[in-house]
Amino acid sequence: MPYSKSRARQEFETESNKLVKLAKKVSYKSSPLTYEHKQLINQSCIFLLSARIEDYTKNLIEDLIYRYRLNGANLGNIPKNIRTKTLLDKQVQHYRNYYNSSDERKLLNSISIDNNFYELLNDTSVFNTQIHPSNIIGTNKYPSIKNLKVLYLRMGITDIIVELNRKSEKDLKTSLESFLSLRESIAHQGAPTITFDDIERNFKNINEIIKYFDRIIYSHISNESGSTFWT
Image (tube, rainbow, N blue to C red):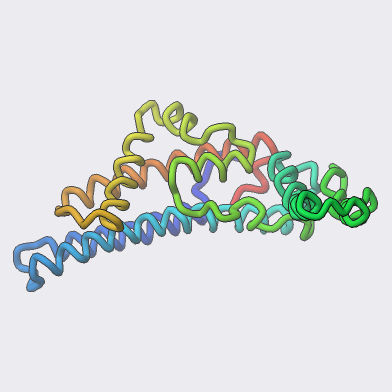
């Protein structure tokens, strides 16, 4: 099946286009808004775009898990890193408790080989509720370079940023870093002046990044699971 935009990408593009149109509307000289009001809107657009990147990842992962369940996937259809991360989540707190208490009896009971979470190792088991989107997303929603690498490694993509530059044949990593730097300066260092040209450039770059993310993830899911599970 040829590539088609995920629902997450479609929603991202719809929402980002709304923000660009708003910023453009208030940028006109005929706008009754003051310079300060225009700056507040421009700053908000940058913040909201960052939130839309988070939403893209969250929606994509939630839809993917739903599609696995809807289309009758076996666990063997799920990328191994997703299953491995989930298995780790099921056990890690028990090991932490053991580290603090040295209670071996409790640890052995908690991770006993007849525990139902070991079903994750069985390729032929039908997928239902063994994996939750939170096993992939965790606490890594903010779209920093580090978090994006962590999130997509959990899906089995070794380095999403390297793939981004390779697939696009551009240095989109620098574009992403520039956007994130602007977002952080608004949040922590006192907001710089942001023009509509700044808005337009950053939104164009981020839309391009999401486009390539979507295609990279599609290729990965198609290879690992089959395109029938694409969102």
